[in-house]
Amino acid sequence: MRTLNDLTGFIFDLDGTLLDSLWVWSEVDEVFLSRRGLPLLPDYAQSIAHLGFADAARYTIDRFGLAETPEQLMQEWYDLARAAYRDRVPLKPHAEEFLHKLCAQGVHISAATSSEPELVLPCLDRLGITGLFDNITTIHEVNCDKSSPDIYLLAAERMQTAPNQCAVFEDILRGIQSAKSAGFYTVAVEEPASALDQTEIELTADRYIRSFAELL
Image (cartoon, rainbow, N blue to C red; front, side):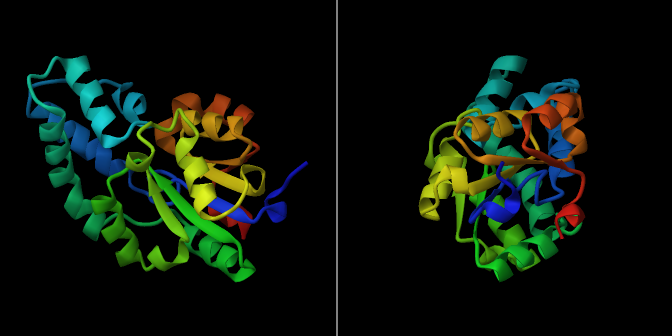
């Protein structure tokens, strides 16, 4: 049975996994919907969590019957979130220590994110961790969401590491399921926004952690 100590590649989701950033999207959703007199429904955030910006915009337009384009929604979301990522989003506790531990071991590290590079890169730069990653792979490069393992496969390919030699760290069920289906070792990172799926996440992932402190 594989363990983290057997692996040579580590792929991290950003929002909700390395970054404590999902509060930003709760604020964005609340402001965006309230501007249109719409309620923030309990399942909305979870319904778009695995989607890239464009797919989330299309889903939102269809769900709420909005007479706007995906591009208009994406720009509004970006404008609402940009300052928070640039100035306020922190790492999850002990995430930086774990990344430095991996670097000291000489393994490969990648990020695989559904977020816009223009949002997350200034955040990673401010936090001083951009240089720890071999690559930062985004949904836009594979043209599918995280219900497909393509983003993880591309990140692994860029590290020249086979999936069975890589761990994927994720906070959402669909990402964990798709990564596992492609042969990755999966580590679920506890995130309150995924609480509705927690039981299935724990059953699906190869390992479940409540904090990166468990891996130090």
